[in-house]
Length: 154
Figure 1 (cartoon, rainbow, N blue to C red):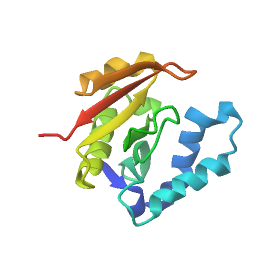
Figure 2: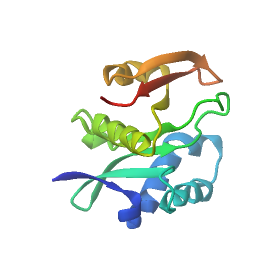
Figure 3: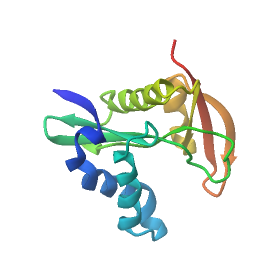
Figure 4: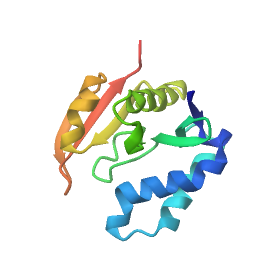
């Protein structure tokens, strides 16, 4: 049975979460894994943001999404963000990404925020629009990212 847990409740998954985030976004930049692991460790603190959520099938890691304060140096005016959305290849196309994004956004709303932000590569834009996120800006930074927003779920 698939469940979504706060990393605080399942800290033994911290190393695999750091590995997936590092491999997906940071390894190619030359950033050491330890830097990402330290950032992931911040999710174990008492504050609602940052928070990391993990999808599990029993004891098997399937994916993650986070709620963080800042995600784009180019857009410091936006906060907080859903970030680091990752689903293991064998678990994709089953609605897990949708569930993780919603879970992270709901955590932001429970923390008292009325709006959540998300940055996406251009080829992922339609996925997030399909989840009800609205494009605010396009072609931001070197990677030409899209910034999307979602207001509190009704």
